[in-house]
Image (cartoon, rainbow, N blue to C red):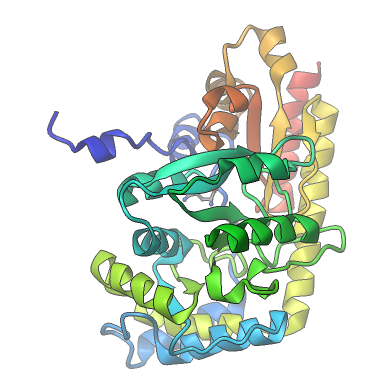
Length: 388
Ligand code: GLN
């Protein structure tokens, strides 16, 4: 074997594999979570201007000054957080690299890190790269709540941090204030760092808001808040993400980031300033647009006979498909996802992609809905085959 044990431990991303499979068979891609519609015009125009400008060489490693200022302003305006662009903010290549650089910055080999399960699939390999051991705490359907005692019991003398994602991919869970308080209490009691992936912060439904755990008492000094422009402005290919962290941890994140990627694309960092300064009405539109898409897909899935968990944020719907597996004699979620692409023409992601304990995802399938209404309707019609 000529590849390292480290990468042997990575499973291929089924999310991206599904995108390839659906291209082969034709059909509707509700697998990889990315919009099939364009970003806001102003943001694209800002990128054109940046490319015509003077931004072709490296930006400052930890982020172009204008962008770090815009990020600090955003956190102050939206959440009342006291963020210093020079000491607290690091810009990376997407929130995925931000998460990796953060894990490299805070974890020593052998440390433990608590991760809520189901989780976004990149966190697993991130821990392997950092040499840390993930300890899983279940979020239980239908509301994906966790047992506070289970969380407390997961802490050991080797625990360094807790990672979670709110709004959550794949479940659509939005952590409630009492849940955030429970996590904060555990962090404060055991001197742990909270690492939160808040990339879907602007995509929340049903009148809910978004609360960064960094705003809870005592938490600003022990939280790394991660977000980025991918999902809020429909530019997942731009790869601009960022972390807000206390100064000592920021130094660590910047060191890791410097040697992992040097920096995020400079012109796109400049254009990201325009994105971050869009008017409030943009976010109202975004939420309403996605809530309508959620309702559209949710309706089709229910009509087709899926057992659905209603997401309160992000742009995915997790479903329960055990009864379909029985009816069609299909072994598990992966086989069902493959069958759905080939027989029905809809690509999805098998639930086990989001669980370290694969059996917990064996009867689950994730759909995504950042797609035009026509595409969602087309998928809905195809899926009605299952109701017959
Ligand atoms: N976050 C998106 C998803 O969960 C994209 C995943 C990826 O390809 N990195 O589908």
